[in-house]
Image (spheres, rainbow, N blue to C red):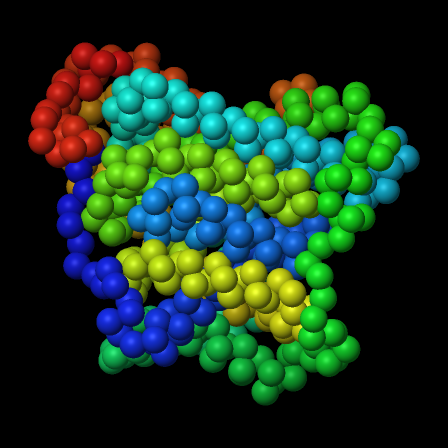
Amino acid sequence: MEFKPQEGITDARQLGYSKFTILGIQHLFAMFGATILVPALTGLPVSTTLLFAGLGTLVFHLISKRMVPAFLGSSFAFIGGYMSVKQMGIDLGLSETLALGYACMGVFCAGLCYFVMAALIKGLGTHKVLRWFPPVVTGPMVIAIGLTLSGSAITNCATNWLLAIVAIVVVIATSTWGKGIIKIVPILLGVVSSYALAAVMGEVDFTSVSEADWFGLPFSRETSVLAVFDNLDSTLLLSSIIAIVPIAFATIMEHIGDMCAISSTVGKDFLDQPGLHRTLMGDGCATALASLFGAPANTTYGENTGVLNLTRVFDPSVIRLAACFSILLSFCPKFASLIGLMPAATIGGVSLILYGMISSVGVRNLVESHVDLSSSRNVFVAALILVLAIGVKYGAGDSVAIGSIHLSGLAIAAIVGIVLNGILPDKLGMKVKSFNGKEKHDIKDEI
């Protein structure tokens, strides 16, 4: 897989520190809506989520040699696991908070799975492991990630199409015709414009903001997973691990797809340098750390990849600045309340563009890798990945139960895609470039 160099800004400080700061705020806004949605759906604390999204991102950057412009936020893939284990705990007479603690233990074990995959890649080599993840698999997976997320964007837009359309129009207009700083902060301007219009229309009640404190701790002893060990139920703990750990397979696949998308956007092969094993360890460490303190699992965020694609500012330090803002804001309940009041339609309008750009990156991966879709073999692999991911998402409630294990559409699509790619013969002997872009090999000789 070869990633062509892309034109963009790799050192945002050359723009001046005021613009550098605004760029960091933009990435903060890009991840905010989806990041706080996961705790809103599961019952986990919002402030704790913001804290460990920021800390997890900094840990990821440290482990990946500060080279990859990726932000880590709440993972949607584990929502079904959280809800399933929470209900099991409630049925046993536990409080919702304590039941979620058991779910977090399952997520902690899932985070450790990243280290197993990282060890395999380090030991066997990136090329030998990733031959199971060629562009015909990762391209459709990236497309599916964007399309499966699109439903939530439409649902949010439907709450007020006027606000959503204002956000969309502002993003497109400023990105297309804007000059200077205006051109590189379209997401931020879209959010602010739509939010301001909602306030003028009386769509937002700021009472909770005025009542919230300026300072507060983002987590407590009661909300952390440590509370589980006060009265450990080994049966529920084992059930939680069995129910949640298999989800890691899907999120690892999602991580590989995201790394391919970021590499394609920036034009650098991050699978080679700093190495996929490092990015996986960073993601796994962020997830394990967050789960110990009652925050959702982390994952590399497609929303921020969309911002990279839109602004062409590829400097990882901008992402780290956004992470620092997230940490600071986790200690401010008043700001968390202000952001929590952001209209769903505003989030939906911005997300609609970002999710679409994620899918477009997947399409670009297929095109730039010269995947031969006249080959029935490749069509079968790509087609089943797309229809299973999207079909299970919208036709089966986003999960299929196999005993106590619930597999998401993305997980099923990943499994089927990898298996089909491995067993179907490639009679065409499609030639692709190796990861260093210097050698060519025949995929069918390795599968």
